[in-house]
Image (tube, rainbow, N blue to C red; front, top):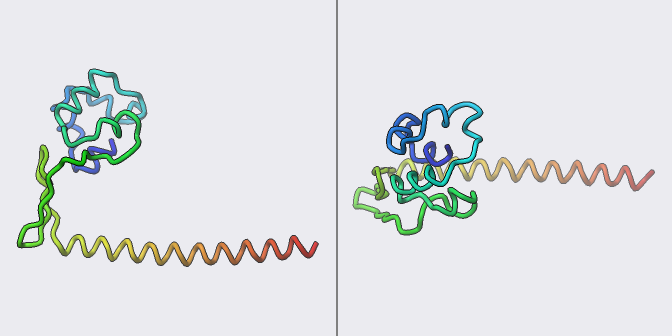
Length: 126
């Protein structure tokens, strides 16, 4: 499910291409394990998907040999079963968003550290 969300693939399109029943990708059935034939079919249809990630959940989701190019108009296109185009502005917005989140989380950590130090000080006085 993470892969199809990441690649903006609809559940119905994913099921149609892989032959996996739609009932297997909704509700609690999403948590059930895939069989060998299903895994094989998914990797055949989506060669950009890392087999290691699909089976173990470790490592990068996408294989390293996917072609990426930056064109003159500052778009990034990813080769695979579908093209994904991201504008330079979208990337800048995402970076800005992530930087803001880092600052926010850093401040939260500082506040938590202060609370921990205060509690330790109180405990040591007792």
